[in-house]
Image 1: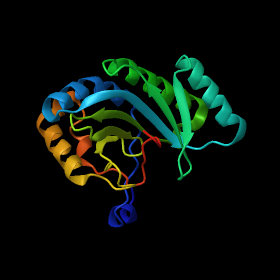
Image 2: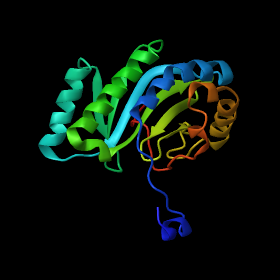
Image 3: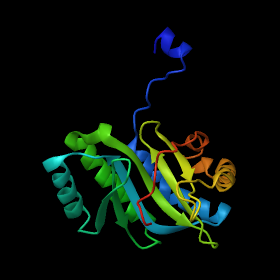
Length: 192
């Protein structure tokens, strides 16, 4: 990093560490105990859309890798979402599937197109929450959309979850990354 980068507040991008996703099963247990959020069994990988045959090949590879239990959609911002589903108790299996998809995308040369992976949760009041791994920053953060509010986020809920993480999740390897804010441009899979 050069002098101008430091002066202008630029930093070198963090190299994504896909293996950090394997901390999610223990984080899910801690999140359930600390804040009352239980896994939904849904997880997503988001990446910049790829045109033509390459996208078809990605879809075919993901379907064969995950035994067909995957959906694809595209959001209004031009991002492609892969949605995988497992039983709510099988967080480890879901994380393995998300990691496998990320790894296959990276190995196929689409690493720069990866945006995030997320794991879904709900509390007893049915409030949605996702733990999001942001590739460009190499960090996790909570994303809590406000139900019925379009693109608005439930910032008080996100702050509550962050406080719980500071107390309980640092032992699972996610605590440090949770302190950085996420991008407001990320959207969960439409209709979920």
